[in-house]
Image (cartoon, rainbow, N blue to C red; front, top):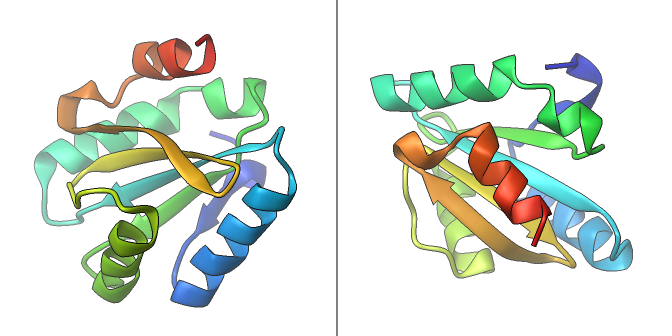
Length: 118
């Protein structure tokens, strides 16, 4: 994955800013990957996302959230987007809301293609 499109999500303020930008730019889509550094399945899912060029091809900024280190941000995200907390979890954000989410072994490029071709 190109580092130009990968960002760390480390504060509630940064999440609020992302959601605001998303709501102000209706044609833009963003991805948030919630990663547990203590989970092998999460590491495998992150590795799959790091190996794909999907985000670059579709100009989708990829936000990485270490939910162990930033548990408060993860909890805030679940509350703000009204999405049940899972780990690992990939959230697709558009117009300031979560339009799709996937967890565990479902986090794959094939799932992303389904979401983006709806």
